[in-house]
Structures are given as C-alpha cells and as structure tokens.
Length: 72
Image (cartoon, helix red, strand yellow):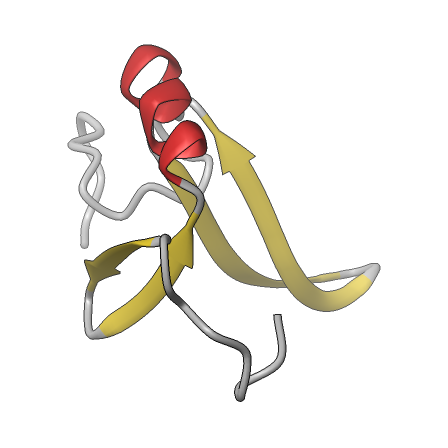
C-alpha cells in the first residue's frame, strides 16, 4: 500500500506506536490463529524484517517472554 492510498473499509491496528491497516477478513482470520509479529533482525546473513503469524516460542523475537535464568 502506498502512503496516499485510501484506508476506507480497512481496520486500523496499533501497537508500540506503529499503526497498520488490514482487511477486516484478515482480522477475523487473525482472531483464530494469533497475532502478526514483525521484527527487525540483524544476524550473520544481514538485516531485515521478519513477519510471523501465530504464537511465538520463547527466544524467537518476543521480548515479553520470561526465560528462566536470563538477564534482560
């Protein structure tokens, strides 16, 4: 979506100061399978965004995960 495209008929989602617009049908689907998680990663292969749908396991980009014996 370009910045000047209409958002009419789309649902607005906001998290951590970032807003996105999605089709309401996608929102119904996400209610069934889980959240959309977008992370910016840097590793030995380079850096870029990763998008995951559904629940994350501990240590896969979810900063709210409480891992035993870890320091945050």
